[in-house]
Length: 329
Image 1 (cartoon, helix red, strand yellow):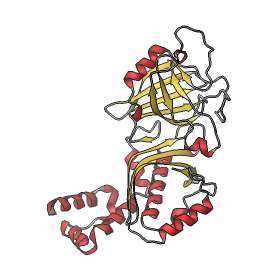
Image 2: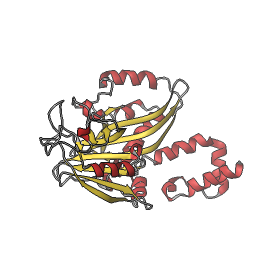
Image 3: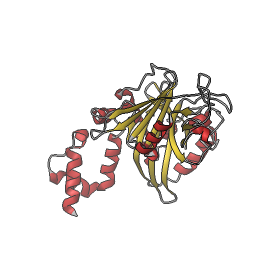
Image 4: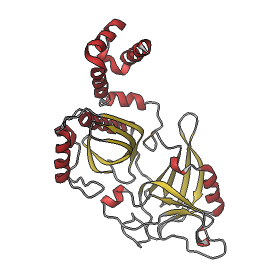
């Protein structure tokens, strides 16, 4: 156990990302650990994760064409102006390769969906939440249910439901548009069914053919800000923590910023020691909303009074390199 601890500490402290914490020898590392404990080292490492330099170096060889994705093995992109649905698959080099491209019907009218019955296909970032195989034959052999309306849609007051990716009717004619869904040929929807793990599939819908993707520089900035938010949270710095929230913030359950501040003030006043871990992290630029990102991760949180293990979602705006959280769940 002692040798294992020594190896871990040596590896961490000899990493080029942590040059500010180097010691002259193995004994210095162990002495620092003996006198100050693992908590002191942990705090220094947490602080280093707030640095943009670490993330720029980390992302150097990552495929970030769709953002930073730890979770998804497949990405579907629907470009409404080009009437297509494309399937990207992560290969052995963790690069997203275009595997297939299908012609697709989308909503009758252009623009982003805003309300029930407007005959528009939404623009945004979605998951596939369910597969339906027993459906009206008008929708083909099967359908994938999307997560519309998502947390950002609800924040913006959008209504409606039942946005699917589905097939076409076998024995009846149909218009060359949908009520808001994405429709592809029946052989294509069956092929999609064979290829996809819906739990690991991301759906991006946009309309502009010249959609600008985020740079690695921008994604590194978001990641450094995210971990600075986590640092303030973990080490009970209430002012720094709240500074990451927009004045426009409304939580998924309707809690506004004023109530949220009072709620967090009570929690931070306890000065509890916290363990907070993020896994399966994704930072996704929001289509056609410059500077807006959807961040998702599995959060493991533990303090003396509360514990949580589950999926967390933040919608943030990056303004002058500062993360502003506008809603969360």
